[in-house]
Length: 451
Image 1 (tube, helix red, strand yellow):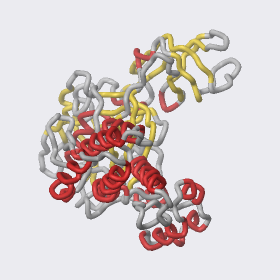
Image 2: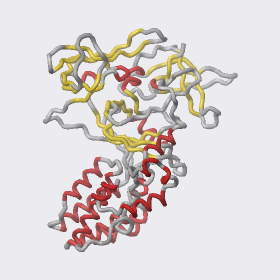
Image 3: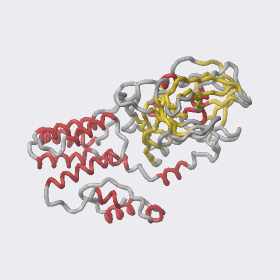
């Protein structure tokens, strides 16, 4: 932190003092004592910045650094990221009017209402109502009249101090990983098995950076309806996407705002299944096979892909997912199992291949809602055919129950085919204590086969 603060010209002593006053108990944390942990609580020229520089140009450059740093600490939608990039590339402002136009475009992106997956608009913006009602009309008029460097510096500073206040407030929920994990301890289970025993309730899946996951768009939309809206939520085109976690930001619980501990995942769609055939991949890890072990990472080309349901010792069937590859080093063919994380790989992008755009999703660590981000293994297993009449069980969350919920048992009544498996299984629940329960359409990964 000292090196980072020094690079940006921040007064470290003032920053330490602000940390101690804002975060209770921080003084006793080991990382803080070691000098390896400092929060950056909304820096402004009046708090942690040194005395004004000798030239207006230096002050303006420093202010741009603060804005860039503040916005980079939160995941932003692609639209905002593009506007920020355009704004920053307009400097140094050889032509103040050009920089002023870029500033207007960035500010406009902050004031446009956010939209849901359904496409209708929401009256929720990244700026405060005070900015929209009082400051913005005069500010826009002033920006349109900018003709000098000094005028541009003044309107940029006003936008920083008043316009992005909402972003700054949201960032204050963000905290160190140690505190986040403490708040998640009530949700996580010690067992690594998602359904370890009859008495054990399911774990909430917690993604990590680099994971390859399956994303369900309809589930994401339901979560947005249930939780307070965040500014970075956006959606890919398809209902189901195989994707890789490119980045992860952790946020503490906000009891007053109705939020559990949560993360924001930056996700990039990646090819999967038959779409992998012909792609070059880099294998980072794989199970041991007959013959000499390979030095990893190693590159190869995918020549075939297979996914099927096969018998095993327990009830029902299990998913068998594998791909055939041709290694670059010796051109030998080999089948690699993709189940249970046995093979870890990344696609090798060709120079003329354009990466799929990032999208962002908030994942809350509580059991009140069905999961919409799944490990590839759990998703593959859930796609094993569900026969009518099969006995299943499912955990139902209930805050009033002494264990936080209970298992319901029932029979599969019907299934719905299609590309989107969200809520595609109809279950008739058992009658318990003379009380007859309704039928429900649920997602297959919420169910466990029950002998």
